[in-house]
Each structure stands twice: as C-alpha cells, then as structure tokens.
Image 1 (cartoon, one colour):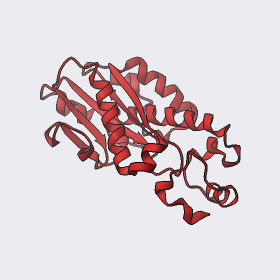
Image 2 (image 1 turned 30 degrees about the vertical axis):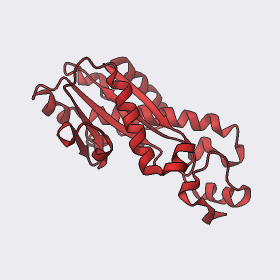
Image 3 (image 1 turned 45 degrees about the vertical axis):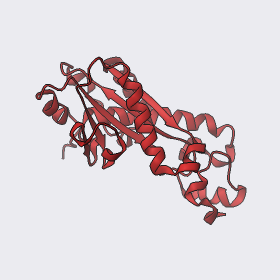
Image 4 (image 1 turned 45 degrees about the horizontal axis):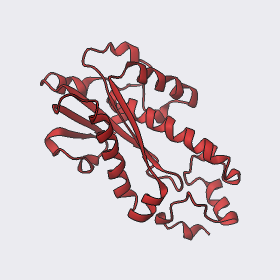
Length: 213
C-alpha cells in the first residue's frame, strides 16, 4: 500500500484565488514535560517545482538524519522561513495554551517582515486558528496538516530539528535525564528520573509534575 504524502493541494486552492503568500505553520513540544515550545513558518513560491520536495513528510515519520537533510532542502527552496521559541519561564507563568499562541504569533511577526504584501493566507496544523491574528477568513486549521500540506510539513520539520538540537545541548547540563533521547517528553525513564532527582529549572511546573515526585 502506497503511503500518501503531503502535497500542495491546499496551497493551490489559495494560490488560484490570487493569494500572494501561503504560510504553513506548525509547533513542536507542546506536550513535553521540559524545554521550550518551538514553532516554524514556511512560505513557498507558487511556481516551485514540487519534485524538489519529494522527501518532505510529517516530521514524526522521518528519522533524525532525514529530518536534518530535509531541513536544508526546505531552507534552500523556501521563499521565506522562520523559527521561534517560547521559553520555560513563560510557559510556567502563563500556561502552555498561551505559550502556544505566543509562539505562533512570534513566527508570524518574524516571517511577515519579509512579506511585501498583506495578501497572505495561513495554513496551520490542527485546530489552532484562534491563536493567530487576522480573522478566520485569512487562516485555516487542517487536522493532521503535517501529513497533507507541504508547507505545514516543512514547518514541522524545521521546528522539530531546531528543538531536538536544542534538547541535545541541554542534555549535557542534565545528563541523568537523557534529554537527547526523550527530548523532554514524559517517557517512563523520564518519569522515573523525576522521582529520583526531582525537577530541574527547565521542567514545566505548570504541568503539575509534582505528582511524579
């Protein structure tokens, strides 16, 4: 059985309506116990040769080396791209919902600086349309969007590569947690390590992790 891969089907709908820029946005790390939440945005030209992106897929379906290689392909072929993060202090103060909203807005603000037209449309993974400014007429939430839209899939790859590399670096500061392996998510090993070592300064206290101690 052939696995269906993301395409420019959704983007073409909006390009055909005269939209100048279609922005794909996705986030990584929303459910993690530790570390920041990261989001990325990607814009491709409506004249791009889609075959250049034939390896692009949902970041969760690619291994580490494939994501790294795809990230370079995306950066080389995108018109514009941006990656932003919201740190642990913000997450713990305001909660993950507001942090999710904030990181999407940071990405849109950064990528908008390169856009010479206000005639853009946003494609976003899931049901997160309420997080972005501009009104519902300028954005569309797509369930499993990273498996359907090349723009969203590309954003998911850039965000995951950035966050994974960040958690690799953090792992040297807290070697007992093996963040290089679990990336801050609540694995069995991570929870057991919490019981033995307690919380670090990069853990999300707003997630009520005290229950594991």
